[in-house]
Amino acid sequence: MTKKTFRNIGIFIFFVIISGWIGVLVDSVLIAQPEGDSLGMGIWLVLPLLTAFIIIIFSKVSRKDIGLKPKIKGNMKWYLASALIFPVVTAIMLLIGAVTNWIDLSAFNLKSFIIVFCSTLLVNFIINIFEETAWRGYLTSQLVNLDLNDLKLYLVVACVWALWHLPYYLVFLPEADLRAVMPVSRAIYVVVAFTTFISWTVMFTELFRVTKSVWPCVILHTVEDSLINPLVISGYISIAAGKEILISPINGIITSILYLAVGIGIRAYRKKKYPANFVPPSMWRKES
Image: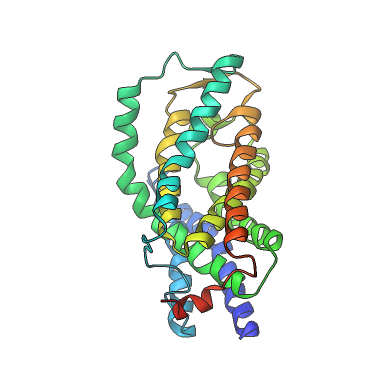
């Protein structure tokens, strides 16, 4: 079973890593592809989940392993947390930025921002079903079955998640959006983004493990995409030059530390609730 799981994870990681580059190749052949919304990006987004589903079907991985059931009973606090984590941390960062004069809020229009936020929720929710079912539902659950220690689990998932994003940051991401987030080269931004993936991976992984469902993670990711991306990229706030690396709501060091603290807090709760080893996903189907 372990050998088979290793093989399947290896297949999944291989197709995850090449999915974006297949998309880049497709976009290089097809002309007049819309920037930021091309066929290649569609391939990049869909292929990891498609690969996971094919492996699940042919390897007979239980759907309970990947946490497709909402499991709302007993998890309402985590569903609420998934909707509030990014808004609360972002509010803290804006407050710090306002006090230190590192963030200019003069252009912020609450009514306009709420409209943008709400109008993007559905699309981002659908997109993040693909991401979270692949990263948490399949990859994380299978790595848990291998009984990796938490640090190894975080690092593997973060590295695969980051490598999947590589063609996005190097090719797909519009230059204007990159400059709005952080005025650095694409190569440097890849390094900065990796630290973000580490902190987010702990948080997303622990939310998945404590709820045994991908849906709180889908909500968490959806709120993030609809909240902090337009906040920064659409110019609702302005960050002082040179301070982006510290306080950006997307990739700031202080921001990442707060998200890492959230993840460690959820982990502490999980370890307290399950003082022995956490029940692996393969055992979930045996629970009532």
